[in-house]
Length: 633
Image (tube, rainbow, N blue to C red; front, side, top):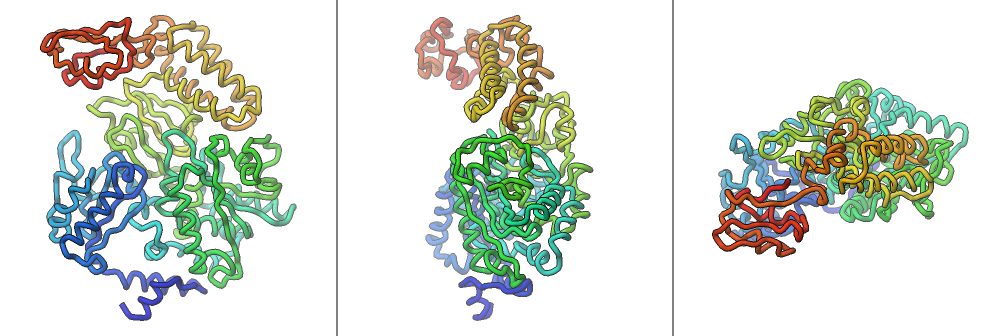
């Protein structure tokens, strides 16, 4: 690397043309040694919670102890979420690609000795198929990664999200340079229409049509016009948008700047919930770096186009994910929704034309501009083009971040990529769309995962949470959970939501205690329809979906609660009893020692018994018994 190249990379190089950007990219790539070993440590939230930061520090210390100059060889890089969250902390050794899982600080020295100083794998830390026992050495071999089609999240887990040069080396801002130098705003909107991209925030409205409508509104009302990123991700089980903001913030910014150019916006906002401190930190760093390099702010790439944005922190109100509530929150008022008599593209933020898209939608824009709208439309299925990022969570072997083409069968996501439910059992249902979605039963496991197909079976795409349930999950309890969540998050502004949610939750509370009757199921359906028709915003109108779908597909389980006074899944405490099988109990006393109610009696090495009248039904005895002697009836 020449001295001039080194100088450019040490200080921000203000870019004044697309040619400058390409030169910088080539200089960065030239400065990198492809044969230099690099230890890549995941710093996604899941891996950090498992000790990822300590693992990275252990590698740095290990290199120092081995007398290796880390500036020369090898290096330690921290990245955003690498995807397979249930196996974290994750570590990848480049360039040979060894992928290690559940790495602890004490493993660092062995990995350095065998896989960094040499090229020997440490197989005990590698991915092992729970069914076949096969060991996989690299990401490319692991079914979880191999069966995906990563486009939006392709750089996450590969780049350092705090270093713009790392992003630029992998193509960041090349689509922006192309748009500013070769395309008119109208041509950008046309490409968006050709792509068929539908909003990834849940509603699935065609993005190109939204942008076209905004241009028409601007012709009537004039400027200013605003572009807004909805990063207020609040669905239980959802962390896709957070992972994108944390792991590849420049993709979001690049998409936002391209959208601003297409619409003629000079100001933008990123609305991010305060519970995402890492996302906010990485976005702030990315924005500061983009401004330093001339990719954001005044006269971007000497194109004559200027645009800047700021971050607004949300206080965590779920309802602020709704567009009008989000706008009022940015305006400094209480985040309450308002009737949508006029669309936000006509009267949004401060009554001006506003385009609001969620994080994943904005991150798709650079892909579309890079490959062209028609090529993008070939991915996925008609009317649901492109890929979709999901959070696969719940009773599934491989919990994590998944990206597949639209129209992928649910069974491929849950069973092939996710590894299915532990023990080889079939999943009971999959909840898609968060609190506003529905439960899809195993009998519909081949349902294509796209906007229209999910709607047909009573669910919805939502933002992308996909919660897998097994036979130990009770649909009545699931309905109670989501209704309670939405009841607490409702702004209470409209009567259908304020009263309807609480009444529906009361009925399900009764069901969980074996009270009520089959007629109450009809009342639940009637209340659900009233909410869908009368609620002010999408929080209330979509709230009944989990209840309606569980009644539709699991009505026999509802009837078991009210007619047989039993919970088939063994979840509802009022309807279950814990007991000990004397044939299996060997009197180890583990259950008795851990029982908080002290209701388990018996001598050592003799069968024990549970006093049902004193039992709290907490399930601790079931968890601690190693001999499968405790059962629920």
